[in-house]
Length: 135
Image (cartoon, rainbow, N blue to C red; front, side, top):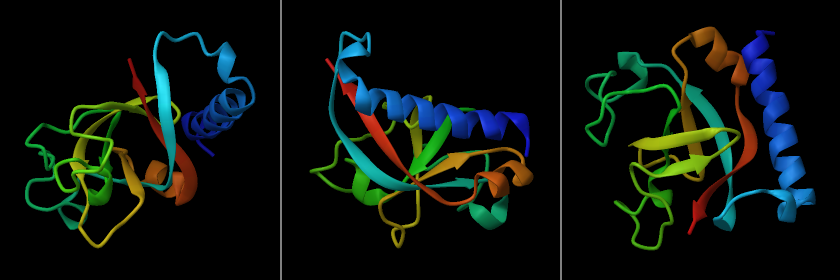
């Protein structure tokens, strides 16, 4: 297993586990409104996994490290009751920026951009949490 994927898994477990057990110890001047349980997958910037130019996201932004795509029902652009919007920083295990969306047939899912196909396969498909900090 590649060290950075292993570290991602360890960080995810420790970050979420510690937060759920000790939320008062999180030293932030913001609050978490709520968690959303999502499926976490990965994608690569290749034509077969993207619509149009694989280097441009649905928001019109260029792809970037720490970028992710969200399923449409989680995004305000497609759902007035959604919590998230393009440009929001959300926390999966590390801060990530929402700048893409997924095909409308996909629900309750975030897709993390990984440049290496092997890394994406190692991440696989797993359950996790996503949240946004509010002032």
